Length: 56
Picture 1 (tube, rainbow, N blue to C red):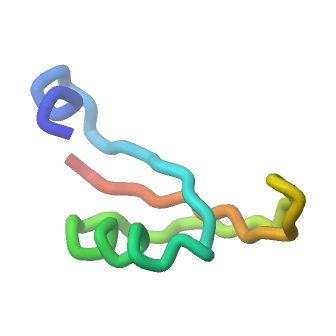
Picture 2: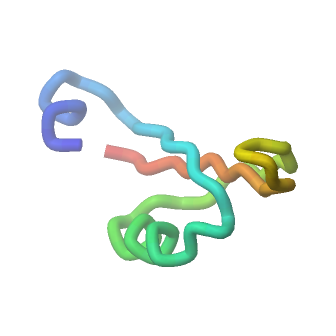
């Protein structure tokens, strides 16, 4: 994130799955905002993908 900020980026996006609860708590504490969710099937499971955004 430090590199992206120095390089002039104004925001970053990341993708994760809703089942990764510990990771999601880390993102929230670091200022990331959940902006979109979408169901998908990966790794043999039905999952909910999440897009998170953080302004820099």
